[in-house]
Image (cartoon, rainbow, N blue to C red):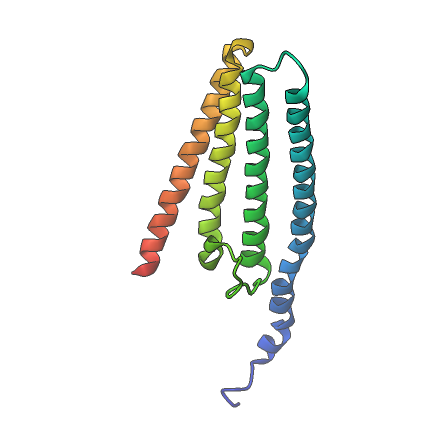
Length: 180
């Protein structure tokens, strides 16, 4: 038997690895759904912005706290939208297919070195940013919140921070091990 001739069992199994590899395309509808969800956030942003402008144009009772809470809500929507972009673009590039944006002038800087580890760290830091906005909104409304809510939101935020640090440290160790 020639060394280039595939083993009969190997020839029978070739379709299975091919099907397994093709199964990554089952994620395509998930990413398309996230694009639709991002459209919902764009609508939410404009709805909140119109509310802010309408509130400012109305005479009387707009307080700085009310304005700050709406602006923090707008920032929150933008940060969640940024998170969606990272998941959609980075996830597609990492798990489905290359986007082939190497020479495109608008290619995000982070996309050139994205992998599952980098994506996890970026997502963890984005979640911390979103959690920070929610925590700030809670503290602004602290007089109307009960102590239990304040405590739990703070603990959840600290958990996000510790988790992100652990993920980043693990990725750093894995990168060092890969270099050696």
